[in-house]
Structure formats: C-alpha cells, structure tokens
Image (cartoon, rainbow, N blue to C red; front, top):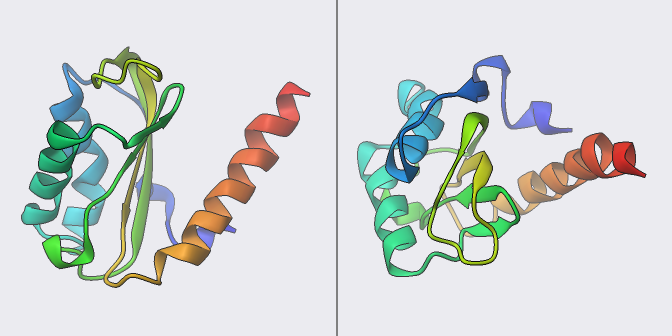
Length: 130
C-alpha cells in the first residue's frame, strides 16, 4: 500500500547518524532531492522537535513532520532505519531506531498515507511477532 507514496530511494537502511539532527537531515534527503520539500521544511521539523518533542510516537519510532506551509510542496514519505539507535530526548520512547519523515502539501493528503503506513507496520512487524 505504501508504494503509492514512496519508491525504493525512500527506504534507507542502517544509516549511521551522530545525533537526532543528522538523523532528521538524512531522513529528509530523498524528499529534498525530488523537491517534495524545501530546506525550510527540515528546519521546521527540528524547531518543532526542540519545542515539543511529541514526534517520537512510540518506542524507537520518530514520525518527523511539520506544517504544510513550512515548505511541503507535494506528498512524500521516507523510512530510515539507524545503524545505532539515537537519543531524541523522549523520556518514554528513546532511543530511536526508525525515522519516518512525511510531507504533505495540505491538511488532508496525509490521511491515506498514514492509514497505509499503519497497515504496513501491522502487516510486516506486529503480525511477525505474534
């Protein structure tokens, strides 16, 4: 289902990052290359994370995003696993091993993408653990 929102270059595996800032930069690189987002979007993600670190949504998972007006020009999604987990400052959910970066140009486009993401995570990870 996620194939509608991402391609091979949007999946980054075992990436080495020194800190959370570098992890956010590397996770956004494919979207920047394809001009799905502007550099201001990545800076907005970092600013939002510093101000309210709610984007570490579950143990080991960062859902990096910002408001559409911060530089999202199209819908896009990347998934990046980290070679070594990185601390993002989340008391409950650190360290992070999976960084998901999403962009949407409006307040509605992301709904189907998040549904597909949830479906794929359940299909590929939750069911395997049962």
